[in-house]
Image (cartoon, rainbow, N blue to C red; front, top):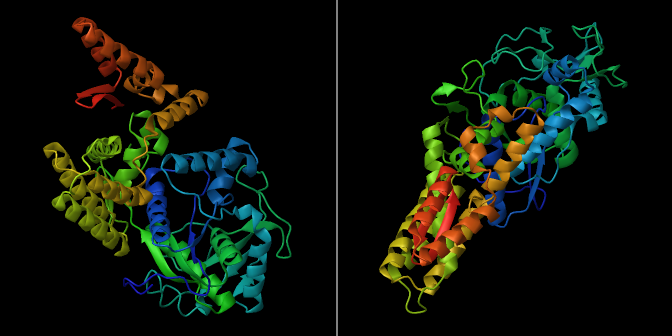
Amino acid sequence: MSGKIETLAPVGAPALRMYCCGPTVYDYGHIGNFRTFLHVDVLRRFLRQQGMAIDHVMNVTDVDDKIIRNALAAGKPIAEYTARFEKAFFEDMAALGIERPEHLPRATEHIPEMVTLIEQLAAKDIAYRAEDGSWYFRIARDPDYGKLSKKDFEGIEDGARVDVDEYEKDAARDFALWKAVKESAEGVPEPSWETPLGAGRPGWHIECSAMATALLGESFDLHAGGEDLMFPHHENEIAQSESASGRTFARHWMHVRFLLVEGRKMSKSEGNFYTLRDLLLKGHRASAIRYLLLSVPYRHQMNFTFEGLAGATNAIDRLRTFYQRMLRGGFAAGTEDAAVAAATAKAEREFTAALANDLNTAEAAAAISEMVRAANSAADAGTLASVNVTEVLRVLELFDGVFAVLEDRDAELTRAALAWAEAEGRGDEATAELVARMGLSDAEIEALVAERTQVKKARNFARADAIRVELTSKGVVIEDSKDGVRWKRK
Protein backbone atom coordinates (compact mmCIF):
# COMPACT_ATOMS: atom_id res chain seq x y z
CA MET A 1 0.00 0.00 0.00
CA SER A 2 2.84 2.42 0.83
CA GLY A 3 5.11 1.34 -2.02
CA LYS A 4 7.92 0.94 0.50
CA ILE A 5 9.68 -2.01 2.14
CA GLU A 6 8.30 -2.23 5.67
CA THR A 7 8.95 -4.46 8.67
CA LEU A 8 6.55 -7.40 8.74
CA ALA A 9 5.44 -8.52 12.19
CA PRO A 10 2.18 -9.81 13.68
CA VAL A 11 -0.12 -7.28 15.35
CA GLY A 12 -2.79 -8.18 17.88
CA ALA A 13 -2.15 -11.92 17.77
CA PRO A 14 0.79 -14.27 18.46
CA ALA A 15 0.81 -15.54 14.86
CA LEU A 16 1.20 -13.56 11.66
CA ARG A 17 -2.20 -13.66 9.97
CA MET A 18 -1.97 -13.82 6.18
CA TYR A 19 -4.42 -14.42 3.35
CA CYS A 20 -3.54 -15.52 -0.16
CA CYS A 21 -6.03 -15.58 -3.00
CA GLY A 22 -6.12 -19.24 -4.00
CA PRO A 23 -7.19 -21.13 -7.11
CA THR A 24 -10.39 -20.80 -9.06
CA VAL A 25 -10.94 -24.49 -9.74
CA TYR A 26 -12.36 -24.35 -13.25
CA ASP A 27 -9.31 -25.97 -14.93
CA TYR A 28 -5.77 -27.16 -14.20
CA GLY A 29 -3.44 -24.58 -12.67
CA HIS A 30 -0.78 -23.14 -14.98
CA ILE A 31 2.81 -22.25 -14.14
CA GLY A 32 1.97 -18.56 -13.78
CA ASN A 33 -0.50 -19.45 -11.01
CA PHE A 34 2.06 -21.63 -9.30
CA ARG A 35 4.74 -18.95 -9.41
CA THR A 36 2.55 -16.93 -7.03
CA PHE A 37 1.88 -19.85 -4.70
CA LEU A 38 5.57 -20.80 -4.65
CA HIS A 39 6.70 -17.34 -3.56
CA VAL A 40 4.04 -17.27 -0.85
CA ASP A 41 5.40 -20.67 0.20
CA VAL A 42 8.88 -19.15 0.47
CA LEU A 43 7.46 -16.38 2.66
CA ARG A 44 5.77 -18.76 5.09
CA ARG A 45 8.74 -21.15 5.21
CA PHE A 46 11.20 -18.34 5.89
CA LEU A 47 9.05 -16.66 8.53
CA ARG A 48 8.65 -19.96 10.39
CA GLN A 49 12.39 -20.55 10.07
CA GLN A 50 12.88 -17.18 11.79
CA GLY A 51 10.64 -18.31 14.66
CA MET A 52 7.40 -16.61 13.64
CA ALA A 53 4.10 -18.51 13.95
CA ILE A 54 1.86 -18.36 10.85
CA ASP A 55 -1.92 -18.40 10.52
CA HIS A 56 -2.32 -18.68 6.75
CA VAL A 57 -5.60 -18.78 4.82
CA MET A 58 -5.82 -19.68 1.13
CA ASN A 59 -9.30 -19.81 -0.30
CA VAL A 60 -10.63 -22.12 -2.98
CA THR A 61 -13.01 -20.33 -5.34
CA ASP A 62 -15.51 -23.02 -6.29
CA VAL A 63 -18.24 -20.80 -7.71
CA ASP A 64 -17.78 -17.95 -10.19
CA ASP A 65 -18.63 -17.06 -13.78
CA LYS A 66 -16.03 -19.36 -15.39
CA ILE A 67 -16.93 -22.33 -13.22
CA ILE A 68 -20.63 -21.97 -13.91
CA ARG A 69 -20.01 -21.60 -17.66
CA ASN A 70 -17.76 -24.67 -17.83
CA ALA A 71 -19.89 -26.82 -15.53
CA LEU A 72 -23.02 -26.10 -17.57
CA ALA A 73 -21.14 -26.89 -20.78
CA ALA A 74 -20.01 -30.20 -19.25
CA GLY A 75 -23.54 -30.95 -18.00
CA LYS A 76 -22.34 -31.37 -14.40
CA PRO A 77 -23.28 -29.81 -11.06
CA ILE A 78 -20.63 -27.30 -10.02
CA ALA A 79 -19.64 -29.37 -6.95
CA GLU A 80 -18.86 -32.37 -9.14
CA TYR A 81 -17.13 -30.25 -11.78
CA THR A 82 -14.88 -28.38 -9.34
CA ALA A 83 -13.97 -31.45 -7.23
CA ARG A 84 -11.83 -32.82 -10.06
CA PHE A 85 -9.80 -29.66 -10.49
CA GLU A 86 -9.54 -28.98 -6.77
CA LYS A 87 -8.04 -32.45 -6.29
CA ALA A 88 -5.60 -31.84 -9.16
CA PHE A 89 -4.59 -28.46 -7.72
CA PHE A 90 -3.62 -29.92 -4.36
CA GLU A 91 -1.76 -32.76 -6.06
CA ASP A 92 0.20 -30.19 -8.08
CA MET A 93 0.86 -28.13 -4.95
CA ALA A 94 2.32 -31.19 -3.25
CA ALA A 95 4.40 -32.06 -6.33
CA LEU A 96 5.94 -28.58 -6.23
CA GLY A 97 6.66 -28.82 -2.52
CA ILE A 98 4.18 -26.08 -1.55
CA GLU A 99 3.11 -26.41 2.07
CA ARG A 100 -0.60 -26.49 2.83
CA PRO A 101 -1.88 -23.36 4.58
CA GLU A 102 -3.55 -23.70 7.97
CA HIS A 103 -6.98 -22.94 6.45
CA LEU A 104 -8.38 -23.86 3.01
CA PRO A 105 -11.95 -22.50 2.95
CA ARG A 106 -14.22 -23.07 -0.04
CA ALA A 107 -16.39 -20.20 -1.16
CA THR A 108 -19.54 -22.34 -1.24
CA GLU A 109 -19.06 -23.15 2.46
CA HIS A 110 -19.16 -19.47 3.48
CA ILE A 111 -22.33 -18.15 1.83
CA PRO A 112 -23.88 -17.02 5.17
CA GLU A 113 -20.81 -14.89 5.98
CA MET A 114 -21.02 -13.27 2.54
CA VAL A 115 -24.71 -12.49 3.03
CA THR A 116 -24.02 -10.93 6.45
CA LEU A 117 -21.27 -8.72 4.99
CA ILE A 118 -23.56 -7.52 2.19
CA GLU A 119 -26.30 -6.79 4.74
CA GLN A 120 -23.85 -4.64 6.72
CA LEU A 121 -23.07 -2.66 3.57
CA ALA A 122 -26.78 -2.33 2.74
CA ALA A 123 -27.47 -0.94 6.22
CA LYS A 124 -25.00 1.86 5.41
CA ASP A 125 -26.56 2.42 1.96
CA ILE A 126 -23.26 1.37 0.37
CA ALA A 127 -24.81 -1.77 -1.13
CA TYR A 128 -27.98 -1.38 -3.16
CA ARG A 129 -30.41 -3.71 -4.90
CA ALA A 130 -30.78 -3.43 -8.67
CA GLU A 131 -33.97 -3.97 -10.65
CA ASP A 132 -33.15 -7.64 -11.35
CA GLY A 133 -32.62 -8.44 -7.66
CA SER A 134 -28.81 -8.36 -7.75
CA TRP A 135 -26.86 -6.35 -5.15
CA TYR A 136 -24.06 -3.92 -6.03
CA PHE A 137 -21.38 -1.95 -4.19
CA ARG A 138 -21.73 1.81 -4.64
CA ILE A 139 -18.15 2.90 -5.50
CA ALA A 140 -18.97 6.61 -5.28
CA ARG A 141 -19.45 6.18 -1.52
CA ASP A 142 -15.78 5.16 -1.08
CA PRO A 143 -13.50 8.21 -1.43
CA ASP A 144 -10.37 6.02 -1.09
CA TYR A 145 -11.27 3.68 -3.95
CA GLY A 146 -8.13 3.01 -6.01
CA LYS A 147 -5.62 3.51 -3.18
CA LEU A 148 -3.95 0.12 -3.68
CA SER A 149 -3.60 0.18 -7.48
CA LYS A 150 -2.92 3.96 -7.43
CA LYS A 151 -5.48 4.50 -10.18
CA ASP A 152 -7.26 7.82 -10.50
CA PHE A 153 -10.99 7.29 -10.64
CA GLU A 154 -12.10 10.93 -10.66
CA GLY A 155 -15.45 11.35 -12.27
CA ILE A 156 -16.84 7.93 -11.42
CA GLU A 157 -20.34 7.68 -12.83
CA ASP A 158 -22.57 6.85 -9.88
CA GLY A 159 -24.80 3.88 -10.70
CA ALA A 160 -22.84 2.58 -13.70
CA ARG A 161 -22.60 -1.16 -13.10
CA VAL A 162 -20.67 -4.24 -14.18
CA ASP A 163 -21.94 -7.71 -13.30
CA VAL A 164 -19.11 -9.93 -14.59
CA ASP A 165 -16.50 -11.12 -12.10
CA GLU A 166 -13.53 -9.99 -14.19
CA TYR A 167 -13.55 -6.85 -16.29
CA GLU A 168 -11.41 -4.18 -17.93
CA LYS A 169 -8.55 -3.10 -15.72
CA ASP A 170 -9.47 0.59 -15.79
CA ALA A 171 -13.23 0.20 -15.57
CA ALA A 172 -14.50 1.77 -12.33
CA ARG A 173 -18.08 0.60 -12.03
CA ASP A 174 -20.34 -0.50 -9.22
CA PHE A 175 -19.52 -4.19 -8.92
CA ALA A 176 -21.77 -7.12 -8.13
CA LEU A 177 -21.86 -8.36 -4.54
CA TRP A 178 -24.74 -10.78 -5.06
CA LYS A 179 -26.05 -11.97 -8.42
CA ALA A 180 -29.75 -12.73 -8.65
CA VAL A 181 -30.67 -16.15 -9.99
CA LYS A 182 -31.03 -16.25 -13.75
CA GLU A 183 -31.02 -18.69 -16.61
CA SER A 184 -27.80 -19.42 -18.45
CA ALA A 185 -27.39 -18.93 -22.19
CA GLU A 186 -28.28 -22.62 -22.51
CA GLY A 187 -31.62 -22.03 -20.76
CA VAL A 188 -30.53 -23.87 -17.60
CA PRO A 189 -30.86 -22.07 -14.23
CA GLU A 190 -27.52 -21.08 -12.73
CA PRO A 191 -26.61 -22.50 -9.31
CA SER A 192 -28.17 -20.41 -6.55
CA TRP A 193 -28.76 -20.16 -2.82
CA GLU A 194 -31.92 -18.97 -1.04
CA THR A 195 -30.94 -16.11 1.28
CA PRO A 196 -32.43 -12.94 2.82
CA LEU A 197 -30.89 -11.10 -0.15
CA GLY A 198 -32.99 -13.19 -2.52
CA ALA A 199 -32.14 -16.29 -4.54
CA GLY A 200 -28.77 -16.02 -6.20
CA ARG A 201 -25.04 -16.52 -5.74
CA PRO A 202 -22.11 -14.40 -4.62
CA GLY A 203 -19.95 -12.16 -6.76
CA TRP A 204 -16.29 -13.14 -6.84
CA HIS A 205 -14.94 -10.21 -4.82
CA ILE A 206 -17.20 -10.65 -1.78
CA GLU A 207 -16.03 -14.25 -1.39
CA CYS A 208 -12.48 -13.35 -0.34
CA SER A 209 -13.56 -10.56 1.99
CA ALA A 210 -15.97 -12.84 3.81
CA MET A 211 -13.56 -15.77 4.13
CA ALA A 212 -10.62 -13.59 5.17
CA THR A 213 -12.50 -11.76 7.90
CA ALA A 214 -14.26 -14.93 9.11
CA LEU A 215 -10.93 -16.71 9.68
CA LEU A 216 -8.49 -13.87 10.38
CA GLY A 217 -10.63 -11.04 11.73
CA GLU A 218 -11.62 -7.67 10.30
CA SER A 219 -7.98 -6.53 10.17
CA PHE A 220 -4.99 -8.78 9.59
CA ASP A 221 -1.29 -8.60 8.75
CA LEU A 222 -0.73 -9.49 5.08
CA HIS A 223 -2.68 -10.19 1.90
CA ALA A 224 -0.95 -11.83 -1.07
CA GLY A 225 -1.76 -12.74 -4.66
CA GLY A 226 -0.72 -12.32 -8.26
CA GLU A 227 -0.30 -8.78 -9.62
CA ASP A 228 -3.24 -9.32 -11.98
CA LEU A 229 -5.51 -9.35 -8.91
CA MET A 230 -4.53 -5.87 -7.70
CA PHE A 231 -7.34 -4.31 -9.72
CA PRO A 232 -10.21 -4.91 -9.61
CA HIS A 233 -10.22 -7.86 -7.21
CA HIS A 234 -8.05 -6.61 -4.35
CA GLU A 235 -9.26 -3.03 -4.75
CA ASN A 236 -12.83 -4.29 -4.39
CA GLU A 237 -11.94 -6.46 -1.39
CA ILE A 238 -10.55 -3.38 0.37
CA ALA A 239 -13.54 -1.23 -0.52
CA GLN A 240 -16.21 -3.63 0.70
CA SER A 241 -14.30 -4.85 3.78
CA GLU A 242 -13.23 -1.43 5.06
CA SER A 243 -16.62 0.14 4.29
CA ALA A 244 -18.27 -2.51 6.45
CA SER A 245 -15.80 -2.58 9.36
CA GLY A 246 -14.26 0.90 9.37
CA ARG A 247 -10.87 -0.76 9.93
CA THR A 248 -7.78 -1.36 7.78
CA PHE A 249 -8.42 -4.63 5.93
CA ALA A 250 -4.80 -5.78 5.42
CA ARG A 251 -1.76 -3.92 6.77
CA HIS A 252 0.62 -5.24 4.09
CA TRP A 253 0.16 -6.38 0.48
CA MET A 254 2.39 -8.72 -1.52
CA HIS A 255 1.88 -9.05 -5.27
CA VAL A 256 3.86 -11.55 -7.35
CA ARG A 257 4.71 -10.22 -10.82
CA PHE A 258 3.64 -11.76 -14.12
CA LEU A 259 5.40 -14.65 -15.76
CA LEU A 260 6.30 -14.64 -19.46
CA VAL A 261 7.12 -17.79 -21.41
CA GLU A 262 10.00 -17.47 -23.86
CA GLY A 263 9.54 -13.70 -23.80
CA ARG A 264 5.82 -13.71 -24.59
CA LYS A 265 2.66 -13.53 -22.53
CA MET A 266 1.46 -17.05 -21.84
CA SER A 267 -1.69 -17.96 -23.77
CA LYS A 268 -3.19 -20.98 -25.45
CA SER A 269 -3.38 -19.12 -28.76
CA GLU A 270 0.41 -18.53 -28.62
CA GLY A 271 1.03 -22.24 -27.96
CA ASN A 272 3.06 -21.41 -24.85
CA PHE A 273 0.48 -22.16 -22.16
CA TYR A 274 1.77 -24.79 -19.73
CA THR A 275 0.35 -26.53 -16.72
CA LEU A 276 2.65 -28.40 -14.35
CA ARG A 277 1.38 -31.66 -15.86
CA ASP A 278 2.22 -30.51 -19.38
CA LEU A 279 5.83 -29.94 -18.33
CA LEU A 280 6.12 -33.23 -16.45
CA LEU A 281 4.87 -35.11 -19.53
CA LYS A 282 7.57 -33.36 -21.56
CA GLY A 283 10.13 -34.97 -19.25
CA HIS A 284 10.92 -32.01 -17.00
CA ARG A 285 11.33 -32.47 -13.25
CA ALA A 286 9.02 -31.00 -10.64
CA SER A 287 12.01 -29.95 -8.51
CA ALA A 288 13.58 -28.04 -11.42
CA ILE A 289 10.28 -26.28 -12.13
CA ARG A 290 10.09 -25.22 -8.48
CA TYR A 291 13.69 -24.02 -8.46
CA LEU A 292 13.33 -22.08 -11.70
CA LEU A 293 10.09 -20.39 -10.65
CA LEU A 294 11.82 -19.27 -7.44
CA SER A 295 15.01 -18.13 -9.17
CA VAL A 296 13.67 -14.62 -9.89
CA PRO A 297 12.47 -12.60 -6.86
CA TYR A 298 8.71 -12.19 -6.66
CA ARG A 299 8.80 -8.43 -7.24
CA HIS A 300 10.37 -8.87 -10.70
CA GLN A 301 8.73 -10.13 -13.86
CA MET A 302 10.06 -13.54 -14.84
CA ASN A 303 10.79 -14.98 -18.28
CA PHE A 304 10.31 -18.73 -18.12
CA THR A 305 12.45 -20.48 -20.76
CA PHE A 306 13.31 -24.09 -21.45
CA GLU A 307 16.97 -23.13 -21.46
CA GLY A 308 16.45 -21.78 -17.96
CA LEU A 309 14.67 -25.00 -16.98
CA ALA A 310 17.67 -27.03 -18.18
CA GLY A 311 19.91 -24.78 -16.10
CA ALA A 312 17.72 -25.30 -13.02
CA THR A 313 17.93 -29.07 -13.55
CA ASN A 314 21.73 -28.90 -13.66
CA ALA A 315 21.81 -26.68 -10.57
CA ILE A 316 19.73 -29.16 -8.59
CA ASP A 317 21.92 -32.06 -9.75
CA ARG A 318 24.97 -30.20 -8.46
CA LEU A 319 23.29 -29.46 -5.14
CA ARG A 320 22.12 -33.05 -4.66
CA THR A 321 25.50 -34.49 -5.62
CA PHE A 322 27.19 -32.16 -3.14
CA TYR A 323 24.64 -32.99 -0.42
CA GLN A 324 25.20 -36.73 -0.86
CA ARG A 325 28.96 -36.20 -0.83
CA MET A 326 28.70 -34.44 2.53
CA LEU A 327 26.37 -37.11 3.94
CA ARG A 328 28.63 -40.00 2.94
CA GLY A 329 31.32 -38.58 5.21
CA GLY A 330 34.76 -40.10 5.46
CA PHE A 331 36.28 -36.70 6.14
CA ALA A 332 39.16 -36.30 8.59
CA ALA A 333 38.42 -35.34 12.17
CA GLY A 334 41.34 -32.91 12.20
CA THR A 335 41.56 -29.14 12.20
CA GLU A 336 38.81 -27.34 10.36
CA ASP A 337 39.52 -25.71 7.03
CA ALA A 338 39.45 -22.01 7.90
CA ALA A 339 38.47 -20.91 4.38
CA VAL A 340 35.48 -23.27 4.32
CA ALA A 341 34.45 -22.18 7.82
CA ALA A 342 34.49 -18.55 6.69
CA ALA A 343 32.58 -19.36 3.50
CA THR A 344 29.96 -21.30 5.46
CA ALA A 345 29.40 -18.49 7.97
CA LYS A 346 29.19 -15.97 5.11
CA ALA A 347 26.70 -18.16 3.23
CA GLU A 348 24.41 -18.43 6.26
CA ARG A 349 24.61 -14.70 6.93
CA GLU A 350 23.94 -13.70 3.32
CA PHE A 351 21.23 -16.33 2.78
CA THR A 352 19.24 -15.02 5.73
CA ALA A 353 19.87 -11.36 4.88
CA ALA A 354 18.75 -11.86 1.28
CA LEU A 355 15.43 -13.44 2.24
CA ALA A 356 14.86 -10.93 5.03
CA ASN A 357 15.27 -8.16 2.44
CA ASP A 358 11.97 -8.56 0.59
CA LEU A 359 12.51 -12.26 -0.17
CA ASN A 360 15.42 -11.95 -2.59
CA THR A 361 15.51 -15.60 -3.62
CA ALA A 362 18.16 -15.02 -6.30
CA GLU A 363 20.71 -13.67 -3.82
CA ALA A 364 19.81 -16.35 -1.26
CA ALA A 365 20.51 -19.17 -3.75
CA ALA A 366 23.73 -17.49 -4.89
CA ALA A 367 25.00 -17.36 -1.28
CA ILE A 368 24.62 -21.13 -0.96
CA SER A 369 26.34 -21.75 -4.30
CA GLU A 370 29.45 -19.96 -3.03
CA MET A 371 29.58 -22.25 -0.01
CA VAL A 372 29.19 -25.35 -2.19
CA ARG A 373 32.12 -24.31 -4.37
CA ALA A 374 34.38 -23.69 -1.38
CA ALA A 375 33.52 -26.99 0.32
CA ASN A 376 33.89 -29.01 -2.89
CA SER A 377 37.33 -27.48 -3.53
CA ALA A 378 38.46 -28.33 0.00
CA ALA A 379 37.10 -31.88 -0.29
CA ASP A 380 38.99 -32.35 -3.57
CA ALA A 381 42.17 -31.06 -1.91
CA GLY A 382 41.69 -33.30 1.12
CA THR A 383 41.49 -30.40 3.61
CA LEU A 384 37.78 -30.60 4.44
CA ALA A 385 37.31 -31.69 8.06
CA SER A 386 34.30 -33.36 9.63
CA VAL A 387 33.69 -30.24 11.73
CA ASN A 388 33.34 -28.26 8.49
CA VAL A 389 30.89 -30.81 7.14
CA THR A 390 28.66 -30.53 10.22
CA GLU A 391 28.31 -26.78 9.67
CA VAL A 392 27.89 -27.11 5.91
CA LEU A 393 25.04 -29.59 6.40
CA ARG A 394 23.37 -27.30 8.92
CA VAL A 395 23.41 -24.39 6.45
CA LEU A 396 22.18 -26.70 3.67
CA GLU A 397 19.24 -27.61 5.89
CA LEU A 398 18.44 -23.91 6.31
CA PHE A 399 18.53 -23.52 2.53
CA ASP A 400 16.34 -26.55 1.93
CA GLY A 401 13.89 -25.48 4.61
CA VAL A 402 12.97 -22.70 2.19
CA PHE A 403 13.85 -23.97 -1.31
CA ALA A 404 12.87 -27.63 -0.69
CA VAL A 405 14.71 -29.29 -3.58
CA LEU A 406 17.29 -31.63 -2.02
CA GLU A 407 14.95 -34.60 -1.56
CA ASP A 408 14.67 -36.46 -4.87
CA ARG A 409 11.01 -37.33 -5.49
CA ASP A 410 11.11 -36.55 -9.19
CA ALA A 411 10.73 -40.07 -10.57
CA GLU A 412 7.76 -40.75 -8.29
CA LEU A 413 6.07 -37.50 -9.35
CA THR A 414 6.70 -38.12 -13.03
CA ARG A 415 5.21 -41.61 -12.74
CA ALA A 416 2.13 -40.10 -11.12
CA ALA A 417 1.81 -37.68 -14.05
CA LEU A 418 2.09 -40.55 -16.53
CA ALA A 419 -0.55 -42.56 -14.65
CA TRP A 420 -2.86 -39.52 -14.68
CA ALA A 421 -2.32 -39.03 -18.42
CA GLU A 422 -3.17 -42.67 -19.14
CA ALA A 423 -6.31 -42.49 -16.99
CA GLU A 424 -7.42 -39.30 -18.77
CA GLY A 425 -6.78 -40.71 -22.24
CA ARG A 426 -3.89 -38.30 -22.72
CA GLY A 427 -1.04 -40.78 -22.72
CA ASP A 428 0.02 -39.63 -26.19
CA GLU A 429 1.04 -36.27 -24.68
CA ALA A 430 4.00 -37.89 -22.91
CA THR A 431 7.23 -37.89 -24.91
CA ALA A 432 8.46 -41.25 -26.17
CA GLU A 433 11.77 -40.63 -24.42
CA LEU A 434 10.01 -40.10 -21.10
CA VAL A 435 7.94 -43.27 -21.45
CA ALA A 436 11.11 -45.27 -22.21
CA ARG A 437 12.98 -43.63 -19.37
CA MET A 438 10.31 -44.32 -16.80
CA GLY A 439 9.89 -47.90 -18.02
CA LEU A 440 12.69 -48.93 -15.66
CA SER A 441 11.94 -48.96 -11.95
CA ASP A 442 14.55 -47.93 -9.40
CA ALA A 443 14.93 -51.58 -8.38
CA GLU A 444 15.57 -52.62 -11.98
CA ILE A 445 18.18 -49.90 -12.36
CA GLU A 446 19.88 -50.99 -9.13
CA ALA A 447 19.98 -54.58 -10.42
CA LEU A 448 21.57 -53.52 -13.72
CA VAL A 449 24.12 -51.33 -11.92
CA ALA A 450 25.00 -54.21 -9.60
CA GLU A 451 25.35 -56.57 -12.58
CA ARG A 452 27.62 -54.06 -14.33
CA THR A 453 29.85 -53.91 -11.25
CA GLN A 454 30.11 -57.71 -11.16
CA VAL A 455 30.85 -58.16 -14.87
CA LYS A 456 33.51 -55.45 -14.70
CA LYS A 457 35.19 -57.37 -11.89
CA ALA A 458 35.03 -60.47 -14.12
CA ARG A 459 36.60 -58.35 -16.90
CA ASN A 460 33.54 -58.79 -19.12
CA PHE A 461 33.83 -55.24 -20.39
CA ALA A 462 31.58 -55.82 -23.38
CA ARG A 463 28.63 -56.65 -21.13
CA ALA A 464 29.49 -53.74 -18.81
CA ASP A 465 29.48 -51.34 -21.76
CA ALA A 466 26.21 -52.80 -23.04
CA ILE A 467 24.57 -52.16 -19.66
CA ARG A 468 25.82 -48.59 -19.65
CA VAL A 469 24.46 -48.03 -23.19
CA GLU A 470 21.10 -49.55 -22.22
CA LEU A 471 20.80 -47.35 -19.14
CA THR A 472 21.91 -44.25 -21.03
CA SER A 473 19.29 -44.88 -23.70
CA LYS A 474 16.67 -44.87 -20.94
CA GLY A 475 17.86 -41.65 -19.39
CA VAL A 476 19.99 -43.11 -16.58
CA VAL A 477 23.46 -41.66 -16.04
CA ILE A 478 26.15 -43.87 -14.46
CA GLU A 479 28.90 -42.16 -12.47
CA ASP A 480 32.00 -44.13 -11.46
CA SER A 481 33.91 -42.50 -8.61
CA LYS A 482 36.40 -43.44 -5.93
CA ASP A 483 33.44 -43.66 -3.54
CA GLY A 484 31.68 -46.23 -5.71
CA VAL A 485 29.10 -46.27 -8.48
CA ARG A 486 26.23 -43.78 -8.45
CA TRP A 487 23.37 -43.38 -10.87
CA LYS A 488 20.72 -40.76 -11.52
CA ARG A 489 17.95 -40.13 -13.97
CA LYS A 490 18.40 -37.31 -16.44
